Length: 111
Length: 291
Image (cartoon, each protein chain N blue to C red):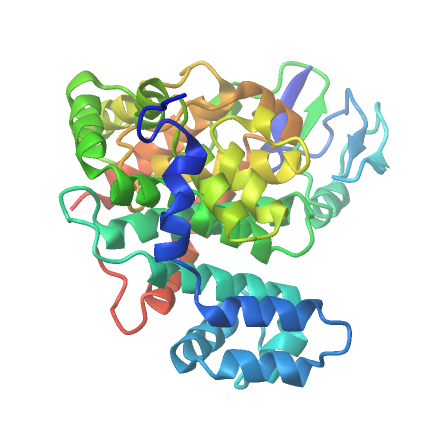
């Protein structure tokens, strides 16, 4: 079982859990095989992630990689952002994602 | 019993709520809105009397934040299209921004302060949209007002505040924790108390009072939770500043209860970034939004 972002889904993947929209209405049941048509339905109903059978894709955890950024700049940005977040648990998934987003944002915005 | 000065939240907001009072027109407006027989025309007339406010409301109503393709050029139209309560909420946010003036620069840079507030308001509004909430303006307003208690403290006890600011910078502590340690309450409590005293509806006052401790918000838990997360986003993106130099700690329970997907965060950040500059420039009048 793996949680996969909608951008990283591929036709043929099999659901390991019902997909529901925000109000809880079921869109697609466990065991269904995904097709292209489903992706647009998910998007339409605001579904961002689904659970699929199997291990998922390794690179999914790190989300789409940013374009070429100077690694030195990135390292510096990372250090600054980590300092901002000293009062937060870096292992919490939301904090982790924010750390990643802010680092990237900072590095690409740097003059 | 003799009490120490500034020992209670009530004491803190007592004089401030009279010296720094909301403009008369806000209570007139609320009264008109609550009156069963007033029409949209009556309400529009009250707002139109304040020209500066009228211009800013129209600019905001026409900004991409609202996404109306037709041009809104009168207050009557704004009230009809956006809704009476929404326009009242916007009027509230805009009038509070004019109330606090003349706080020394070494305590707070007002422009930075409101920028942080606007960023929080935008994040709260976008989060609320994704949660399928109605009447989005109350989230925007709660964001604009969430740190207002800090301004009260800067006015009432500037010396102690300066001390706390310096102490936090030297020891890497969170300002709202230092406030609680010093006074027994923090700026969120003060803000909530001030808004209550100003008779601002509890759907805005309560989340402001609870944005660092969402357990306090028992009537409007969703509003408080959204505001809590929005504040963290605004800090993380470093848009403006209200005195706190670090990102406040995320309440994990709040995060879990809202059931926000981590995959939503990139979208959220993108939307805040794309609306921020323009909203700042609208709310600051003619100045541009550059830093």
